[in-house]
Image (cartoon, rainbow, N blue to C red; front, side, top):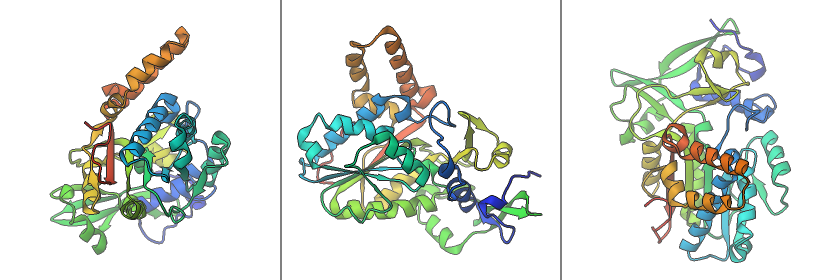
Length: 360
């Protein structure tokens, strides 16, 4: 038995709560949810993302954005949307990078898509740029190609979990007993959810299934906007390609993974995420008539985009201490045992030109 504080998250014992709904309350409940009440980023937070490790990562994304604009024929109106911008570090660097390219800088409109009022305030303080717009939907983007970018965006959207028993799917839920005890419980899956899951070849013949229903709901309006205006969505996240048959949900606190029991004890104080099934994501994009570049590792993508050469140029003006830090950040971003292989890159797009950099 584990006894967290559930009352403040408005979690009651009326009925079992599916995993994705339970985690969503813990992460996003206004004012008290994990992303609604604290700054989780950096050394003093619970985890470190690539943009907070090094400006070099953000600069490379900026360079890729410039190349995408060129591949699309240098349109006079060009939209860039960062999904889940964290503390704003990436967009802040991209703004500076684009200033070196006057034609694109004049054409580009930058939007930040953020649900958390707390993080939105943090981003505004960090970026401090009146030309950037924060949006809750994509209705204001009406013309010009649009590039959506998300770094560690999809993993933070809670997933559903199912157990396949004799070809019937039972959904994992959390049941509340005595108002304070959390119990795992499997109930018969919703027929609509099961029907949707069965349309994906990637999920066939699995005994345990993770399904990003909420993630796909987030992607639906994005894909509609891309289909209407052209453009694409570039996602970088930790995840896997081959089918996985066990839970990938994980909790992180003070830059360390913690156990499931510790996660329950620290609801609202630990980050909860899951590994992204990139094979499923690719199938979803293709189902929605987007083209998909081959899925590559973060190391492959960053090296193809010239991160090592860029670092060598920057090092010429650095002190020895700065050079050492630069090398440490490259190790973190590129090494197989760090972020290099675990993090994958996928680009779903609608455009006549298929020759986008970073994937060949």
